[in-house]
Amino acid sequence: MGFATEFNSVCKFKSAQELYELLEYGRGKMVKSGFRVYPTGQKVIAYTPENEAIAIVRILVSIAEINFQGEEITQVEMELIRKLTEEEARIQTALAFEMFFGEKE
Image 1 (cartoon, rainbow, N blue to C red):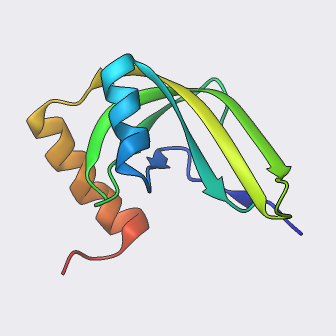
Image 2 (cartoon, rainbow, N blue to C red):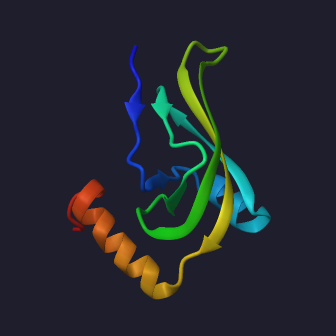
């Protein structure tokens, strides 16, 4: 049992619904499998399930726990700072593929 540390600039959504709620309401949460450490209080770049940069968010809460099914999960609550411009999103996405996600096919 260990903690996986997320990159300080990456907050990747796996669920389109979680991302929609953040963009629509300005606040949201996501649930990740495993114990992870998110930089609470910091601003980070949020990515779509397709690995595209979309917004700047602030991590408000990060809770790692074992749920009732015995699975290790981390819940992350965040607030939307602002959506990225088209140019910012393009550049940030390209950098993320080079640094974190691997090359685009």
